[in-house]
Length: 313
Image 1 (cartoon, one colour):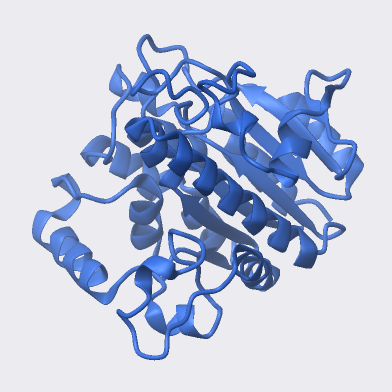
Image 2 (image 1 turned 120 degrees about the vertical axis):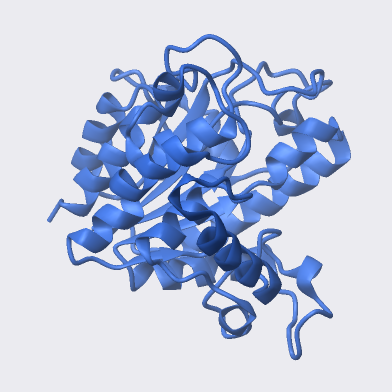
């Protein structure tokens, strides 16, 4: 089995109120099927249109306060309760303690340590990659680096950060999915449709055991409380997922769509929310899908689920 994880920053399961929840306004096919399916006996939701189960997972991790990105993303990627380790929810960028957890336990490190292949699909500009490499060298293990948990984990594990050259040949995806925001910054670069970006993601995933794509525009739209922007980024994500599913071999692959905390589903507030987050599991392997759905209850269960899928024959 191969695993493609699509991480969606700041996507919770909120009330069906079109005045505050853009998921009720956006034109969605894949996400609607994943998030609005009927409950099943194991507590997950089964999709009528896809071989999928969706779990409402607890992002709070047993720690008071609003869930945040640094601790939540570290927890997703390692299975270690980052918020409990820190004694609080930590926003934005992991510090030294969380970096040590990422170095030892991240899925990137564990997949490579088992002789597998891992890919971080996001494209980074040469300027950012150079600045990040310099910051890591300058600060060492104890310093603070302005990079998210997934980026740090990939760098520490030795997973190559993809650049414009990979984007141009369809081996990377820009953070806006289409690459429109990068147009004009690289020779020969052109934007693609969200569906084409999704198909490219699936092709990369077919050559790797574990592939991750980070989509954070949902969290930005939530913080800005911008309904129009939120609808746009959700529809773009939905079309990206449709493209990936069009190309994935679901008999040999597991697609996981997950998040670290709520935000965009409630634009009445500028902050993160306490809402549960979706963990959607899409694969034709119904026994595997059902077993994982029964075992996932909070963010600590994501990394073990990925490892279990990778070890499934």
